[in-house]
Amino acid sequence: MTYIHLRFEGRDRQCSNNGKIQLSVRQAAERLGIRPNAAAGAFHELQQKGFIVVTVLGALGVTGEARGPSYELTEYRMPQTTEMTGRRLYKAWKPGADYEVARHPSNNPTGSNGNRNPSRKAGRSCLEKSDV
Image 1 (cartoon, rainbow, N blue to C red):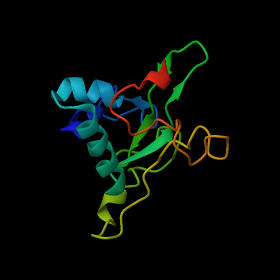
Image 2: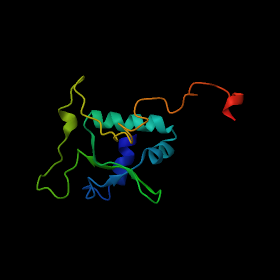
Image 3: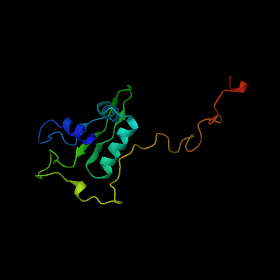
Image 4: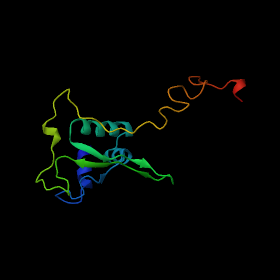
């Protein structure tokens, strides 16, 4: 169902905005009536099987306004190409040979909190007198 909603984001039958199609995980979850984690899983599966490719990762701007990722539907040709059809990566997919899923890089991979717990109090279920 997620693919159908992505397809509806295409402007016309030829999908002239292919590569710029935007549908966030939250929007998909809301439209499908599912949890965001389930919607994210659906996007990952569509990428793994070659139905969609992320062309631009989502981002959070300095003003706090978010922009969802942009997608290419591999079924349709990209507008700026001379090809008559899309790449149709899903036709070459085989079990165990998934395509790579686009992921955001970590925000602080080597910083002071790199691979440590953010607090020495992590894992506790209640405050102690020394915490206040």
